[in-house]
Length: 236
Image 1 (cartoon, rainbow, N blue to C red):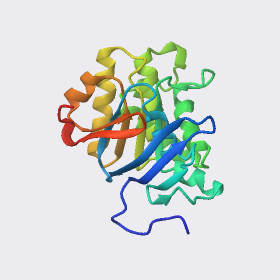
Image 2 (cartoon, one colour):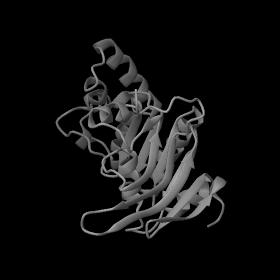
Image 3 (cartoon, helix red, strand yellow):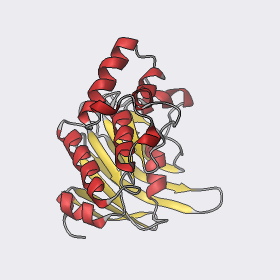
Image 4 (cartoon, rainbow, N blue to C red):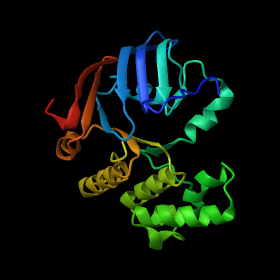
C-alpha cells in the first residue's frame, strides 16, 4: 500500500512540522514535532483551547493537517486516501469521556458492535467479547443494560469495546471526566495494565493528580505548541 510505512522501526505516532488552521482562522496547532514509540503510555495535558482535541482528531484522521507529515501505526496520514481511513481506525481503540454506549443494547452487544462492523464471525465475537469484559472486571454484567450500570461501569464497558479488536493503539479522551476519583484511578490502572501488555496508550486528561501518581510520559500543549515533553511523569 502506498501510504504504509514499511519498517519495523516505524513509531506508533509521529508528527513532523505539523500545523493545523481551521477555516475560521483559528490556529489550532503550529509546527508540532513529536514521536511516540510503540508500547509507550503518554498523557496529553493542557488547558482548554491548547490544541489537544485537534491533536487527537489528526491522529484519528478526522481532520487533515495543513502542513507537515503524520504517521500513525504505519499509515502515512497526510496523503491517505479516504478509502484507507477505516483500515487505520481498525488499528486503534477509542475511549470517550461520555461513554457513547448504545442505550438499547446490553453490555455484550455494545462491546460486540465494534467487532460486528468489521465482519467478525459469531464465534470470534463470543470469544473476544467475553475476554474483553473479563479484562475490565465486567464478566458478570454481559446482559445488563447501560442504564443499569454506574458511571464507572459504563466507562469500563467503553474500555472493553476499545480493546475487543486488539488494537495497537488506545486513545482515551478524558476517560475519567465523568467518574468519581476512585473510579478514575481504576480506569487508569486498567489502561496501565493494557499498556504493560504492549499496547500504546495515549490519554488526554485535566487530572493532574492522575498524571503525578502514574508517572508516565507527559506532553503538554499550550496555544497549539508543545511546551513540555517530560519522560516518566517528571514534574512540570
